[in-house]
Image (cartoon, rainbow, N blue to C red; front, side, top):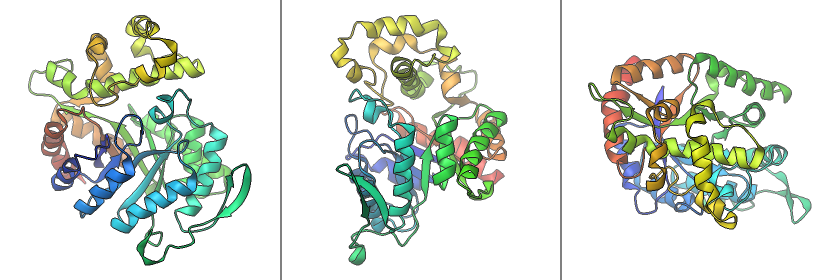
Amino acid sequence: MEIGVCVASHIGDTDYIVAAETLGYSHAWLADSQMIWSDCYATLALAAHRTERIRVGTGIAVTGTRPAPVTAAAIGTINALAPGRTFLGVGAGNTALRIMGAPPQRIAEFDRYLECLALLIRGEEAVVEVSGRERPIRHIMPQQGFVNFEDRIPLYVSGFGPRSLGLAGRHGDGAVVALPPNAAAMEFFWQAIEAGAGAADRILQRENYYTTALTTISVLDEGESADSPRILHECGAFAMATIHYAYDQWRQFGQSPPGFLADIWDDYCAKLDAVPSERLHQRIHAGHNCWVLPEEEQFLSRQLIEATCMVGTADQLVERLHGLARAGLNQVMILPALEPRYAVLERVAKDVLVPLSRLS
C-alpha cells in the first residue's frame, strides 16, 4: 500500500509537493478544475522541476475541457521534465464542468476520448474528431525534447460506477476509485474493471493493474472523537465536497443521495434553493476541498466525517489500509483541507506511512 497526496493545484505552493516527497509519499496528483484552482499543468511543471523521486501527474485531468491531443501534449511536456515518473489521471469531470453549469462528459464520448488519448500519449497516431470531421492526429515534432512519449506515461482512469469502471478496464493502466469501505466493495470494483477489459478482449492481470482511491486521513489523539474541532478542521472540506457531489448528482441526474445524508438533506437543499438559479452552478462547489463555508458548518457531523474520510487511531488506520491492500487497492491519496494540509501531511507520514511501510 502506497500513500499519495491529491493537491488543489496552487501555482504559489509547490513547497507542499516537495514536502510530500521528503516525507515519503509516493505520488502527487494535481487536481484539474480551471475555475477553482491554478492550472494543473503549469503547477505540475514547477513541481516536476523541483522534485526528483515523487511521481507527478494529474489527479484528475478532465476530458470534457480539453481535446485529447491537447491533453496528450500537456502531459508529454511534463514527462519531458520528469521522465519516467509522470502519470496521467483522467476523468469525465466533476467540478471542472459542473462549475460552468454543465454535466460531466457522457460515457460514449468518454470512451472515444480515452481510446484516442491512450494512443496519443504513446506517441502514436489516433483518429480524432476535429471541427466535426475525423482526422488522423499525432504529435509530428516529438524530437529535441518538446515532449516525451518515449518514457511510458501510465493512464489511470477515474470511475465510480460500473460503466466508467468498465472503461478503466478497457483503456487504463489503472483506475481511480471511490474509497472502498471493505474488501467486498473492492471486489465489486474489480469485477466492473475486469468486465470492461474482457469486453475489449483485453487480458488484465490484477497484480499489474494499479488502483488508487481518493480520501483524506486524520489520526485521532487518545480519547478524541471524529467530530472534534481539529478533525472537522482537517476533514470538513473533503466531507462537504461529498455533499456538493451528491447534490449535483441529484440535480442533474435524479440520483438519490446516500443514506448518511438523510438527516441533513432537506435543510441543505433549502439553503441552496435561496441561491439565484443562474448562479447556482457557481455556489454549489464554493470552498471545494479547501475550506468549509461558514453557512455550511452546520452540516458537518461525526456520521458524515466517518462515512467520507479515514479517521481513526494510528493502529486502526494502518490495519484498515493493510486490509485494503490485501483486497487489491494499491494506493490511497489524501486531500486534507488547505490551511492544515502541512500538519496533516506530517502527522499521517509519522503515524501511518512509516508503520505501514514496515508491513510491506
